[in-house]
Length: 139
Image (cartoon, rainbow, N blue to C red; front, side, top):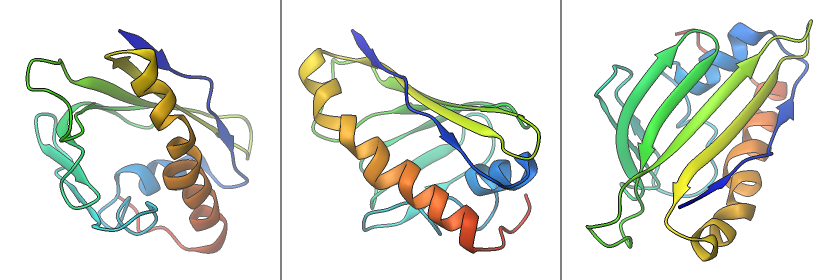
C-alpha cells in the first residue's frame, strides 16, 4: 500500500468557515468539482459518496475543527482490495488556517499517481474558490 500526502491549502478565512465547508449541510456538495454531487451523512459510520456514488465510503472520524476522516473506495477497485482512507487535517494559523488532505492506503503507486492531480482539480482548487467567494452555511 502507498499514500498520497503533501497537499495543503492555506486560505484567508476563519477556521470555523473551513470546517463548515468540509462538513456543513450545504457542503461539500456546493463546491466539489465534478459531476454527480455529494451525499454526506455527517455521523461517524454514515455513508459518504461523491460524483454520483463512486467513490463511496463511510465516515470514520469527525473531530471539530481539526480532522475529518472517511473510507474511500472507487467503484473500479476489486472487492478484495481494502478501502483507502482520506483524512482532512485543519490547523489554525492566525486568520489563515491550513487544510492538509491525505489519502492513505492506495493499493499501489500507479493508483496513487492516477489520482494525484485530482486532489487539486476536484478538491483543493474548488474549495479555495468557494471559500473566498461564498458565505458558508455553518454546521
